[in-house]
Length: 379
Ligand code: SF4
Figure 1 (spheres, protein in one colour):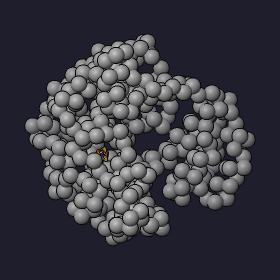
Figure 2: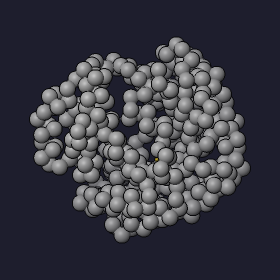
Figure 3: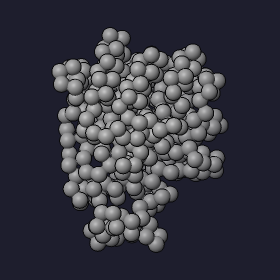
Figure 4: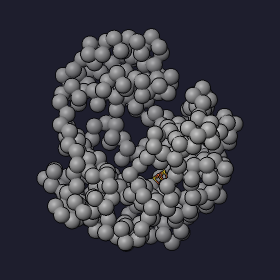
């Protein structure tokens, strides 16, 4: 088995952002403690894969994992080390939100073994931050970055969102310029998706904000690919950019069919072959299930050969520079993509969304922007 990844979901935030549809709720100390107890129990009792698999990435996602105490993070990591064989030099990432960390807290996380920080800057414009319901300012983001550097973090990623309600191309350009000037090792740059049922969707419906304009969003995407490239970042995935060698090793597992095991409410797992499963989404129900029976798995999917081929194809196409080698794909999955999807591929080729270079199928920049439409053909 290839070295696996471990994902730990921490479902607590200081406040809920208006665009968020993740499984997360407000932080409560007592619930957070019983959640950590449940998490460590789930990790140590994990028996879906029986062997003590080797793991070389651990990812604390959320939610806002930086709301954990140092002791809670250390207990979770101890459980991972007891259940899995954690490789020397493993990448251990924690998602953080500006304004939720202190210099002492960051040094303590670093000492506990966390060596990569991914934090949600989202925008450097305070009015845009308020509109999103974020609880921090742009200055908090700048301060968090210097605190991280001072605490010894040399592998840092920022998230920024483009296409915010009312955001102009010029405002996005300023955000991008500031992010690039701060020179994080990695950037995740997303176009805003407005999810039904979120407060933001409601505010747009009520006419309080204009919905992001698709043409401006496309121009923002073009600007981000151009600027990041001239600043020395490689766009290795549709929304992810990095300095040489600084890809997110954990997220690469999601796109390349490597096993990953998720723990905590709503966490997803994949055995690297044909099994996917996920946990109960609600935090309290998750804790109850772990207390009652030691696991909280709520869905299981067995992928047949055609599902496996389709997944490898649309996940692999996300990796823009690497693409999908169709000869290797055929050897592995015994499926001929050029025959299976002949009509769709002809259509995408004609629209300039894909290229075939020898055996390697890739999305073009236009295809990256319209990737959801391309991937819909494969699922
Ligand atoms: S901080 Fe992140 S996870 Fe928490 S509510 Fe905001 S967007 Fe959602």
